[in-house]
Image (cartoon, rainbow, N blue to C red; front, side):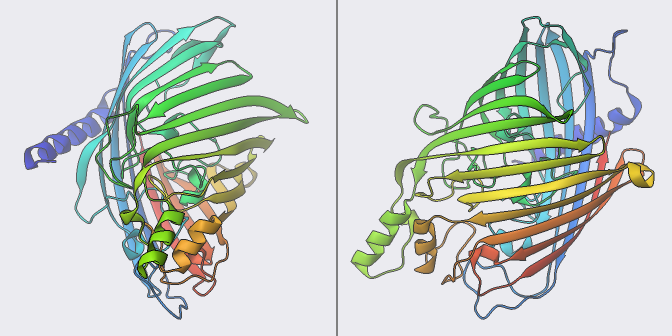
Length: 443
């Protein structure tokens, strides 16, 4: 972004932040909004004590003590254009210094840390999209005002088209107990399916379209999105009929002992210019060198899926479970180096100790690699995030717990702890511990 562009984006964020504090959203007598202006800012500081490691490779998590920090600020502007039509735009600022240059973990510890993070602020457009809703009766439901969601009424049975610049995770694999790293669990393995190599640029956003048919008990979603031109790159490939990420999800509501739950089944298919592990290994065997995915890239596909469960245990206690996997034949293209993942946890509201706005979360994740991915790393190959030089393979096991406290109106302060056994799937290194503080502002 040019100097002039950065200045404009700074001005937009500053003016919008000021306006959000003095201007209420325009609401009609029935509570519906014709427009809204919201803002969030999140700061995360993490500390990693030194840990044991007999060797360290090019893409290893460094065994020395390290500190990491990130800051994001986002403006949410929404306008109702016509009946069922809504337009949203989100200018955003981000900065961050990651652990070990973002290397050495499958489940990275901070979901706010973009792959383009740097110590200086970067200003960009995170989202710019149109949402069109067509109602088909079945009664009406109240839609609460939220980020990128105008308050109003919607038919219980409806068709929703979302088109433009957004994140695929805005629509797919949502879970009310573990989805948003600005408020809940921060580890990449817990904020979405670890093995869903979801289409996104290096900041986590893409361009595409999704269509949803929603009823009170079930929903069906499908979407196609652009992939980056290169693995974990920033520019997107506009040839969406050749290079793409397809996603489909079926959702079903249910009850167990009078407690509500949601079950979601997700399937995805990606096509992009990716390196195949077996091709890289074969080329290295023929030349006597080290396998290198960048030397064997060609148009390949990747398929996978996952299951997502959220279950209310009580009014103030909820459970989530996720499991996901993909074919494991090609390099990670847009998310992280996880080929198999199972995760689950519990979130408890603070009503029991008279802190209703506080929240305690405890979760675990177990991540794995496919046999060909393991073989590639064991032979000295490098992925985008992984590469210790050799590999004594074990599953990467992650524990995370947090306590989020409402410190003031619109302000939450969080203590976070994460323990990673076998970082980067290597039993020779670690375990590693991470202690974090998060400050989140919303208005």
